[in-house]
Amino acid sequence: MAKGLFEAKVRAAGLSGEIHIDSAGTSSYHVGERPDPGSIEVAARVGIDIREDRSRQFVSADFDRFDYLIAMDRSNQQNMARLRPSESSRVTLIRSYGGPDDSLDVPDPWGGGIGGFERVYEILDAATAGLLAQIREEHGL
Image 1 (tube, rainbow, N blue to C red):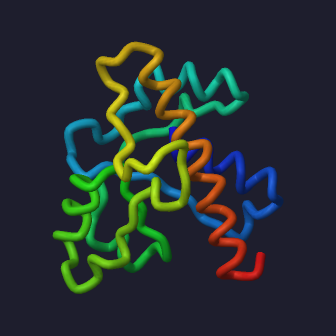
Image 2: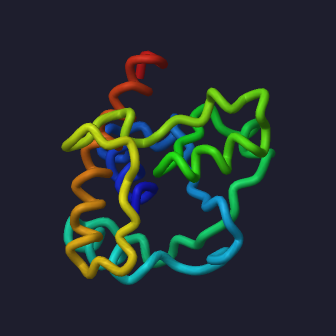
Image 3: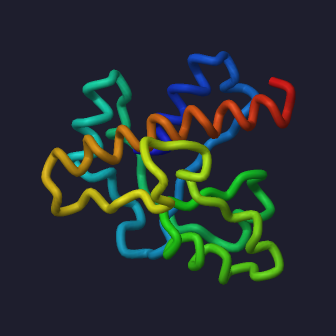
């Protein structure tokens, strides 16, 4: 859901040609799968279609491919950093860019019904807005 929300914000800002966005998980369990139906439903409610997104696994080469490496929670942050300890400080938490409260971890909505996905949407909507604002400021966009 985070990727779809951020892509929508980048597109609305007219920056699709300037900012490349990708998403990856830290385990191989869901590689190739579509987003959870709850994520698809909540994103669709706000006009974002993520049905064709597919999961891939985060790999060490992503440190070379991307300027920003962003994790949903501290566990994933640690898993990402382990792949290249010398650059572990580059892996930030999405909630460090904003959110409705002071927590650093985005909760896993799985098992929480549609309400869990709605809560994650609220968190990610604020955080992705903050991320875009920071990128625009840092790069003069």
